[in-house]
Amino acid sequence: DAYHLLVMLADSPATKGSLWLGIDVHTTLAEVLRAMGRLQESLQEATAAVLLSRQLGRCPAERGRALLSLLAAQAECGDLTSAGQTGAELGEIVDDLPSPRLRGAAHWALGNAAFLAGDIEQARKHHDQAFEFVSPKLDLRFWARLNRASATMRLLAGEATEDVPQLLDRARAAFELIGTAGDFQELAIADSLAALRSGDAERAESLVEAALAEPTMLPGQQRATALHVRAKAKRALGKTVDARTDYQTAAEAFHQAGAYRRASNTWRELTELTESP
Image (tube, rainbow, N blue to C red):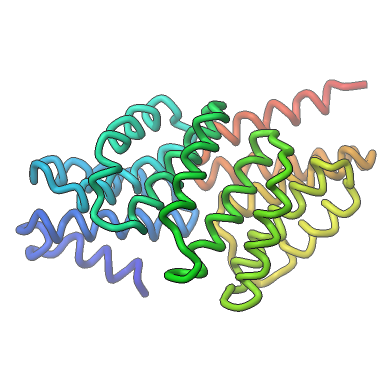
């Protein structure tokens, strides 16, 4: 598969002898590992790609893609201090990136990191800029994923804004044409977050149950998010014993994926629930 092929390439003399190939292989491997829910390993590969890219001098495409991958891994791992530093470096070259898609992806990643850091205004600005560069006419699935991700990040940040339903509806319409099973699972998780935010805990529980029941393998951090949503829904419905089990399972899943900050936050929520009368 792609992962094993990339591991072989990373260790090959040809890759080690070429900065360009090394950056490409390590960056792609970081992206694959993040999609597999192996965030710490993704972080290592993205770091290797960025270190190599600095030897090339001013090469915005290679450096930008490597920084983008590193930023995404740092943000999902919860290392927000390092993500802030990487984001600042990426922000310096984002306008020099050679393609609209790469500039859109960079603003997407910068927005995600800003949402996680609590800088909502800057996060929304970056996502708005991402939409300026990402067109449904050129890459419908990429555009749909941006809509879904932007809605999800707003909801995770506690932003119950009016544009969330529109973002989700646009993603849904596009996925109906070109989406994968995994796309619909992640959309169901976003829908469950929206339901929970609106106070409909029963619908949130039902949606996330359906997402978790699908046989398609979710990345570890996405599965942990789904379990966390289910825990919150069960808590709201008064199913305290089941909620405790889901909080614990979610925390363990976040930790296993390498999302240590979210694991710590989930353990804290479990402690609060356990200690509440």
